[in-house]
Image 1 (cartoon, rainbow over the protein chains, first blue to last red):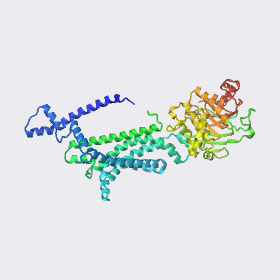
Image 2 (cartoon, one colour; image 1 turned 120 degrees about the vertical axis):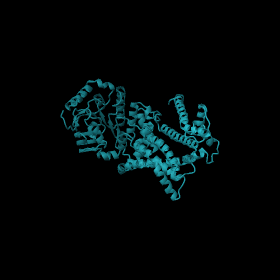
Image 3 (cartoon, rainbow over the protein chains, first blue to last red; image 1 turned 90 degrees about the horizontal axis):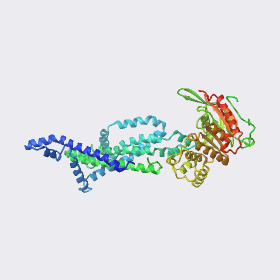
Length: 292
Length: 282
């Protein structure tokens, strides 16, 4: 493990570079509107106050980092957690359908992988269909799913969770197929000499061998699941969730709100992937891995 | 010595086998056994007209260069390969029936321990599959680890053990369910000579204590001569038996016996067998 101290300096340098570039681009992208205002108000600004103005617009093209930060802070900590403006509440709405969809997707992906490994007909015929399913743009499918389910009276979490599951089952299926097939021929021969049944080989050899593959694909799956939940909130104008806030922000040109929601979404994503990673490491330690 | 088939039913040198011929039961009986692999480059005769008998309690080594069919023959006994010609019986049954009856323990070239299981749980793997009760599993683990001198390493993981210790754990695993036949495929091939010497003498001790029939594949002439009561010399292209040598060495074998005249004579005969099989040519 690289010492935390040794990681913090390179990371901080990169963050500072990004912030500097961000401020520079904010000036660049907000300047046209600012010059417009100045022309209309017939006022002249020197360079310093011009730059400061580009960083303080109410509806900037590219908000400056401090604008996003204060908006984020306000909507997370200074607003009641249950209110519609709270980023915590909206994040929770998105997170709940992410987690449900992720659970469905993981189980579905694992079942598909078990089928592919054990049934030769599935092995030959199923994979192309699964891959094809992922090539259809999710933005095209999401509205259909929402509308169809709304027509039968199911709204809210389930349709969004289904979209999340749709996006997250694929990495798990692919990873688990590799994982279930990962045992060496030597170990398979060994089980053969014990006359082990297929189910014994599955539970005692294939499943434990596939655990590292499972957690790696789950990291990808959980991120895809979050994307699915957010995309599921866009098409029909949902009232709550990160996607809903993005949508509302774009309707009312509240760019700072949009960026705040984006930051909230990113934090949720980081926490989810980190949670899966930490869980994976704990499980592998308990299973006797060397902890490399 | 004749090339091709070599069926042995009587001692050729007058020295008695370990168990005594009168009560010997045929553990492995192969007649005209042949195995041809269909490869991309054409058919490969891995085994050609192999006829062999292995009696109960023997320690039989199979020696020869790569491609002579020794591992293939072991795998046929274990029902990991199916012969294309001839017949073979293991304990009076077909190899498949013998495998289903769990009549043998197999030790591979690599230890093949499951990295997510402790040594103890690795040794209980066959016992779990075969449905032994928990208490008996614990007792068997304790007993077999003691046999291979690994007591105290039950809770360790394979990566914490050296190569030699992992192989010993693999042998313990093969012994845990009391199969009378032990099939070992170059188990010490990946280890250095000092560890190998140590494990060879431990293996002989183990054999003396458990009275099992052992089929041992090796490519080391001293190892084959040191360990066995019978040495089967094989050569490649096609894989066949060139010579079967009954060892005249006594049952008690300290490591020093490898410098005795008797030992060298047998080793010489092994080399002669390899030479007649063109094993030393390209």
